[in-house]
Image 1 (cartoon, rainbow, N blue to C red):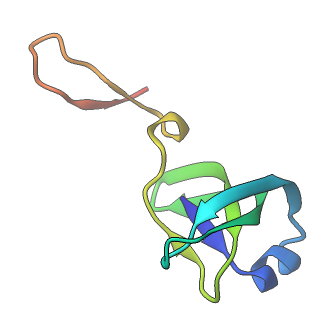
Image 2 (tube, helix red, strand yellow):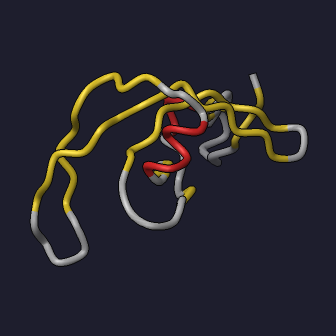
Length: 84
C-alpha cells in the first residue's frame, strides 16, 4: 500500500483513477483519490502500483501479493517464495 501527499500527487502529475473509501486512524471512513501509476524502485526490485492521496507524509507499506512477481510453490508442503 502506498499513500502520497497532495503535493507529491501534483508534482508527479498523476491521474486520479477513482475515489476509494479508506478507514482513518480514528475509525472514521472517508473517500480519497486513488492515483497512478507510480513506479517504485528498491535495489533490483521494481513495481508499478497506484497510491492513495492522503496525509501529510508519504507511506509505503505492504505490497499486495497480486502486485508482486512471486508465487508460492509447495510440492514438499513447505511454502517458498520463488521469483517468476
